[in-house]
Amino acid sequence: MFLNRLQNQPPAHDTVVVIDVLRSFTTAAVALDRGAAAIYPVEGVSAGIVLAGLLDNTVSVGAIAGGDPAPGFEYGNSPAALLEAELAGRRVVMSTAAGVRGLQRFRDARQLYAASLVCGRATAAAIRAAGADEVCFVITGEWVDRDGDEDVACADYIEALLRGEPAPAEDFARRVRDSDFGRRFVAGTWPNLPLADLELAAHVDRFDFAMQVAREGEHLVIR
Image 1: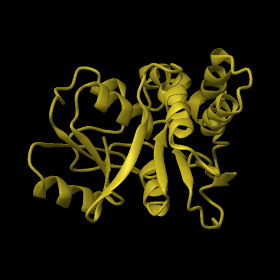
Image 2: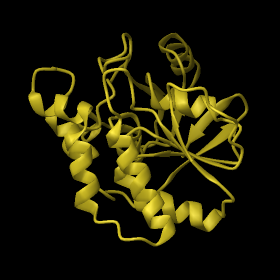
Image 3: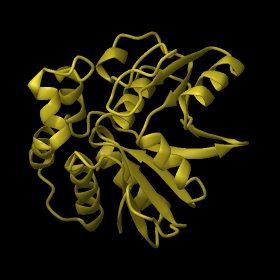
Image 4: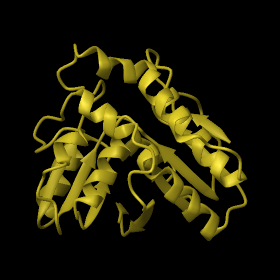
């Protein structure tokens, strides 16, 4: 099942994979690889700032619609910017316009994953290990001015792996680069959309972990 973030969404209670390749869940994967203890996806800039002030040893990462950095946050939603960040043992509070909202919308799913191409194979392996009666892919990148094919490509990749079908990595990486949003990174005319972010996002299976989302009290947490 595929769901567009702009459409009314029927309930999905089993396994939900919320996809944001450009860039939320590529950024989240880099943060975890850099040693972040946990990621707290929070809907809304103000709520993110409040939570970052309540938790110990935090760093805030976020962006508003269009990709510009969220005011008051330490980092924008840029995976490349986090490659050298000191994140070991820190809690990352993340607020973005698409991926984070998708997680919040499906927070009651039995199994909930944040996904991007950098951890596609690991996500498929985690789903297979946990078992699933139904897998719902939530496409967050489709907007009125964006085709969202970077996210559909990721969903197609994970689905092919789950079905045991051929899944040539470069085919899916090319779709990320050729998507409407991907071409904006290539153009170089958007200062907050660096080409380095696109290259990271198109690196299929860079990481060997899945990003399962759990509920801890009132918060969603990715570990």
